[in-house]
Image (cartoon, rainbow, N blue to C red; front, side, top):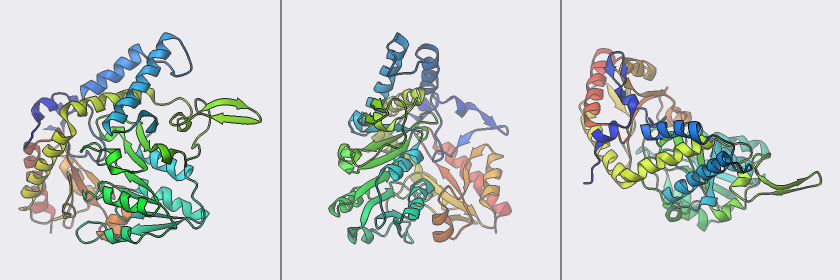
Length: 404
């Protein structure tokens, strides 16, 4: 089994030296956002101190360097997922990427969007909003093993214009068979969109292999800064989208009587963009690529299995994740008789950061898991077995004292 040198990696993350309530920080909220290595932090500082300028239009030295930095970041992201640079559209986050498609795709009355009960609100609300224009929204069910009812994808009808699905659930950790889902969608003549916010930071992702028309993900979940996201739009699929926003940089020529738009990706990047965010994302991609996504995935799977094995001995704890045949570093749970917010508060007292609540997936937690919320520990490449041991010990103490 290929392993990574986690102790050396941890040295790159200054925040991991912080103490919370007189305890060394154990950061288990990686599904919400990842921490940032000094290579990214220092790189953004370098950008502001040496390059800062509005790119693309101006020809002075700083603007030219800023343009180069922006273009280089696009090329890095493209290589990272095996795409072409012109297929990479920079957005604020995965949420904006999905909303871009929902606004720009000419869906009409009578069309159907097929999503799932497993989705983050970011891949549910943009489609539910379209009901106002007569678009039907159907949801694929989730079974007792936290897996999708895959038979639905064998029964697609011609009115299904778009099939959209999360690659990895942010609540259960289930890894969906997106290759098969995309293949079934295309066989039906439907477009396919993947929410890869929880997968691209943790595993090798090849857009050509998957074949999806659109893929959305966020920089801040993969060691990059906040405020930068990506929409991959396959060349042929890009042509089906109309401009999302209009303004500067996305036009070739403007007359009061005629507008000539730029080609993608500029067509979808109106106005001054988050240039330093793209630069920082490029540095994050460099960092992940140097370690190797296959190595990261292998390490995380081993650490996840260690966590679940340790959790088997816990009493008064309900676990809602890890039931699927294929899952990754998400551990969703509740202490019986204790609200998830209270559990998270008590863990924080020991320096352990976890998420609590609905995790922006209320239909899944409320309707399918029948819970008023859940606590969630989520792992990444800088977490360790020692941290898992401390987490399990503290959770066990909380469950023994407050659980019932």
